[in-house]
Image 1: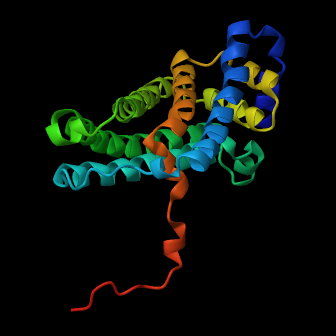
Image 2: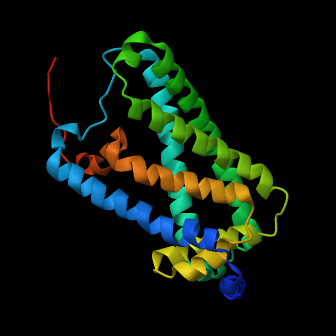
Length: 240
């Protein structure tokens, strides 16, 4: 696997200027906005650091959509994080070949993608058609939800593209891009991804768009996942 990724790196001289801009420069701009914007919002506008729950306005559809949405999107995020950023040497030691890894990614991504799709459809219909929920929704609330939905649809569509080439080569190129971005090697990153199918590039660009909008949306509540509750003692709020 590592030899294949090194081959991608040798193609740096053949990368177009547009490819360099989109996949070697824009990722760092998006990540800077993501981290710095989140810090600034937390420092200056802590009262807006919330998800603005609309459960009091309508709870039945929210419950039906929110649970599968969160299960699906958290699993997809974890899968992307592990799949793209785990060094190829680790997969090699585990005996997982590139085609096998691609098959696992397609199966897991498809399963949790469908779960997320089901939940998100309910949430979108609820937010757009329920008068009370719609009245309390900002343009950003609706925009970020639709952007997430578009990203999900593109991700699911990419599974069908992946099914047309099960050699794992595209997967290795995407891994090389992500890992080289992480280690601040943008030229090699752009070279790695230059020849992949356009649907994967669109998926990446939409992802960076989500990173850019993240600090200005309700998504910031992700930073406040109450992990401390996992180790906190039970509290009796009301006894019978």
